[in-house]
Amino acid sequence: MENKKIRIALTKGRLENKTVDLLDKIGYDVSELRDKGRRLILTIPDEDIEVVLAKAADVITYVEHGVCDIGVVGKDTIMEYGGKFYEITDLGFGRCKFALAGKKGDDFYSGYGVKTVATKYPNVTRTYFEAKGMDVDIVKIEGSVELAPLVSLADGIVDIVETGTTLKENGLEVFEDVAPISARLIVNTVSMKLKQERIAKIVKQIEENL
Image (cartoon, rainbow, N blue to C red; front, side, top):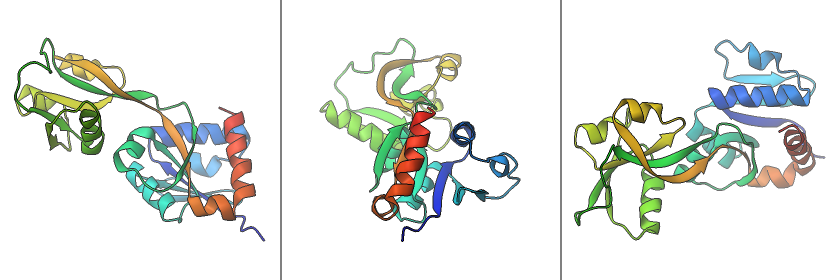
């Protein structure tokens, strides 16, 4: 007998809101998700679905460890943290990109010294420059990465860029695009087998309403 309850982990914030809109479009009762207060675990009545709200990196952890069957998370987080799960569908919202940027007018690739790159995403950055056969020094920044080139901490930054307004306002520009980003649907590998019918149905409903 297939265990019917499905638990979905959503990335808090914008992806959460877009996913709730999508679930609403499918016809699910999302009233509890819209009026959640401070609760982190919510239910979709009549569907036997539980929704867990978490930070992006934790969505991956919950799905990987099987405490959630399905997750909605940005491709940026998947690229940075990796993990064992199935990446099923590109949901198409939350679109932006990873880009290499720096001070306007600078030539990032000039000279012979090892370049320093500041970023919140060291793994994405390392992978990108390794593919170019380039050795770079990576400095991990937690806050506003844009500061790093301005205070001469780094020659460039790898960061998520949506409109580029923040870069422009700080005298920076995109040197090149690194990778496109959007929200993805991920599924736990064991859940995919044990709850196959139920998950396939939800995935189908989601894909039909994108």
